[in-house]
Image 1 (tube, rainbow, N blue to C red):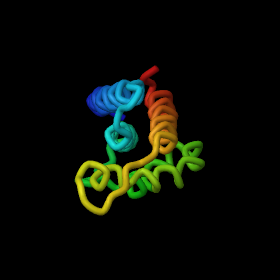
Image 2: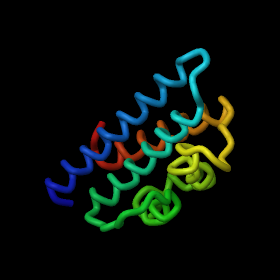
Image 3: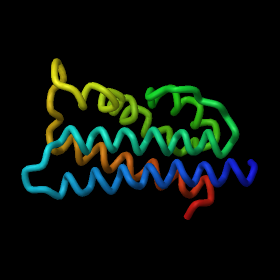
Image 4: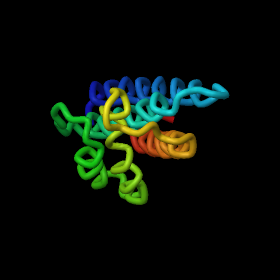
Length: 132
């Protein structure tokens, strides 16, 4: 791991933190939407996973697929395994939750769970990469 990789990993985590802040703020609204925090929770996980890959110098291409990223990260952070199903469930929040059409508005409990998962994944990544 180079110093540059560590610094760029930190930039990914900073962006993930911004997504968490946004998700929390929207969920604090009494009648706030649920699709927006779900999108930001998904984005936080995506950025955290990309941070790990950056930390280890692994190219990941242009993907929003959390399970593709997850499969690459599990080698370094095996304790993330219990979050695999949740990451798979959050995959639709990257695109479908943002646009009108066939998607269904997530309920508040789904949005809260997505945020909770994102917070835990970002915290794991922060520890793994020495960004605590």
